[in-house]
Image (cartoon, rainbow, N blue to C red):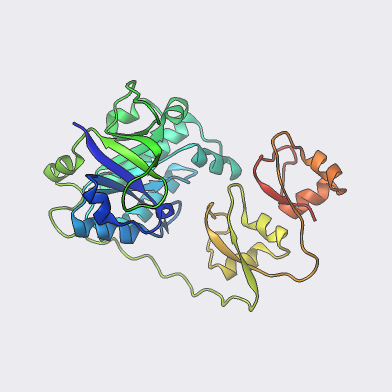
Length: 331
């Protein structure tokens, strides 16, 4: 059995789902969100359109969990987002090297045992709520971090580009990230399904398909955000950023950023998140993007400053731990 599918997120923009279905695609996996209750900006539209035209759809949630308890919370957030929609395909947990990098930047080392526990916690929560659970990863991550026993317990959506990999059982194969199809501008991930999940899920009575899903209890409404100052700029959170580092970089405090952006937990921000930053008058700050092989002391010498100053400006606690690709403030 070979079923033609694709997966999308907000990065594909506005999708013409009628064209997608007309091109012969038989299922779609939609990103519902990531981290702690951060919905994908296009999920609701994508899910509603797939439901409207009768294209079977499932959902996936990107992992930024630091513990099994975090994973359960991420599952709850995913369930809240997907509850109003008809999900005929699995609800999947996407765990990759970016998940490990995020954990390291927050002081947590992801071991094989911990990664396996995180996946189990998410998938078990999904199953507790009556949905079909699945997890997604690539060959290198599977071989490095995840127990082989996982795919005997949960369905696997496997990413390997260019050729099939038959060393492990999987129900969906993501075979390219550079697909081009009608209805979507730019590249898109393409998949082949080897299990008719729509039939499996329907026959098992899962995903609340027999009746209208009961929405989970609504979370306590957050407090109204503090009105923004007259002058502010926006900043997109980069991998490795912390709220305190961003505050130092822009001459403010993490408390001010948390209040301005209605952030209840200053220790929990996510790459790709857009936040408001008060605009500061005075000389324009200088920045530098760390290159492979750089050291903090070498950067300090190059720009006529000190390691201590760089650590203070960027909230760096360990001068021996910097990452190529990260941007730091020089002055």
